Length: 299
Image (tube, rainbow, N blue to C red; front, side, top):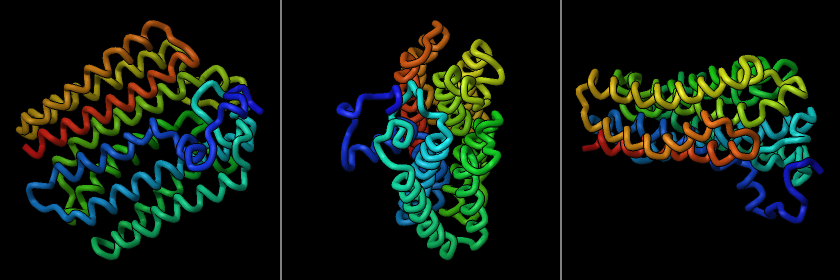
């Protein structure tokens, strides 16, 4: 049993797998789909494609989280984890059970993605395969790129650019300039989510040789990166509103309300378990900003 939680405190049944899916990170999957879809909704909106895109995004996020849990767990990286529940590292679920959950989640993404590819463009299959591979090799395989400090690049590309632009593309079958513009702040928000996650775990990661970006650049620089990412995302929203001549996007600046406390906590030197609440606040910030941007686009 790891230092995470006593066995008696762990959830059971569906609650266990829900907790293991790391729900606080799911805004990173939800926001790009709603923002990308809203960017082109004035031209066309096909409900089933929106639902399918959301299903694919959530399934990929959950599969990646389970894959991270599995790979770190069998390596022993999660044996002394201060963050949210890890299924394998805590002993709450066997490695084989988590591996099965990975395949089911990736399978859902693959099947629904195939339906979208048939309806929209067969080339979407390539994007889907790349997304699945990126999710697995983040911490899986012999040379996981998450252990090389490249996780933030993956998050920005796949949960920013690919997910936002792709969600618009499945509606219109064309690349939307507005969706590309908005994909940048969406990706920066998602990156901030990983930055704070890795800051929280940096001490333990360094001890076991998991060289995340936070481990590589150190505590102070990681805090500055988090703050710069959060504030930079809002600055990019303002720029997008001006460039696209869509002033409604400025509603997204309402996300500064939950962001301000998170930034203050990080810059105040919070560590370890104190940063769990910041992870939640970061997810809320992305969700609030994304929903308000969507409202602004639809208005």
